[in-house]
Each structure stands twice: as structure tokens, then as C-alpha cells.
Length: 243
Image (cartoon, rainbow, N blue to C red; front, side):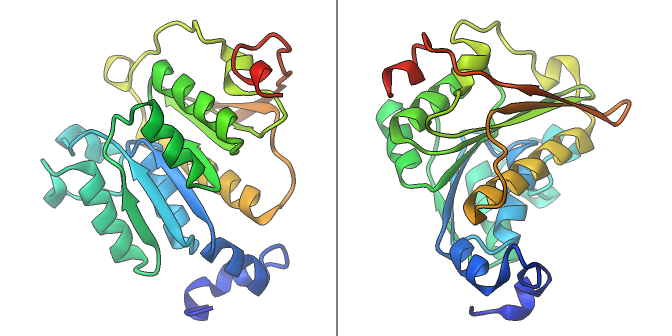
């Protein structure tokens, strides 16, 4: 381990230890979407000592982003989110290698990015992107950590090969998702869900527990969680063709 002091607070955990920290150093996570979810998720993954982060986004930093997308600063306004996030993540932890993949990724580019990762975090904000990411993860047999948040509500789920996939829960004909621009969002709501995505990704990489197959729903207004068991759809047009 090159910098014990940096990671000492998690290395002391028996579930991590020196071997677990080495495992994180040798791991790669793909974060798709560097907005309200991807910003805190990528910061926590880089801070935890992940060896490589693959980042994908297509937008530029706008003033309205700064209320909740905490990887950016006022000086980043107008910059590509990929460039700004990469610079700020390297400033946090220069040991973490950053590989930027400008979006939107086509089907082949998305599949290649997913195959290059050990875990995928879907931090996007629309159904077409979520369905495309799910298809790529099923085809490449990579675990997917999916998050979403709007207003005072958030949800998160882990999908693993062999279990139910995102399309089993939501189908591929889902209604158009509301946007934060339309419905609003309180900054810490996406912060909590993004941090949870990082937590679940780290648990997957470290082999701590099994969080797959459940959809967790959070109501920030009442600080309450609900959990629903997800069932695999034997007729799913995505995972049903990859048995």
C-alpha cells in the first residue's frame, strides 16, 4: 500500500484490512453521469482508493449545477464536466487514475466501457440511458448500482448477473422521467443517494454482504426507507436472453 495514512480509517475495519485496500487499488468503477449522483459517488470512490475511475458525461458545468453537484467549483463554470471532475478528483487523490469517455456513448462504446470496469454506477437522469446501461451490464455480466432522485425522494438498487435486472423492475417501455429542472431537488437528497451508490459499489468490490435484488426507496421528508424485493422476469427481453 503506497499511502497507509490516507486509507488508515478504513483499513482498520476488519471487513477491509490491507488485503481489501489492495483489492480496491486493483479495481475499476465506471461512473456514467457526473451530475447530482455521480459527483458525490465519484468523490467517495476516489477517496476510498479505487485504482481507476472511468467517467462518462456529455455536459458542461452550469451555475445551477453548483447547488448539488459537489465535485465542481465556481471556477469550473463553462468547462466540460469530464475535464472539471477529473481535475478535482485528481486533486483529491492523485493515486486514482481517471479515464474520461465523452458521452453520449454509442452501443459499442458503452459496452466497451462496461467491460473495462468491475462495477458500473448508473448516475444518469433518464430512462433511455438507464435501459442502455442495463443492457450493456447484462451482456457484459457486470454488476450495476442504479440510483435516482427527485424532489425529496430517492431510490437505489444493485443488479447482479443471474438475478433480476433493471428492466425486470421497470420494463423497457417506462414513462418519461421527470427532471430536476421541472420538479426540483434538494441538494442533499442526491448527495445521500450518490454516497449510497459509492457505498454499495465498495461493498460489491470488497465482497461485503449481498445487496442485490432489492429496490430501496427513501423519503427524505420523513427520513424513512422502504425496501421491496425484486423478482426476475422470466420473459424479460434483456436478461431473459442471457441465461
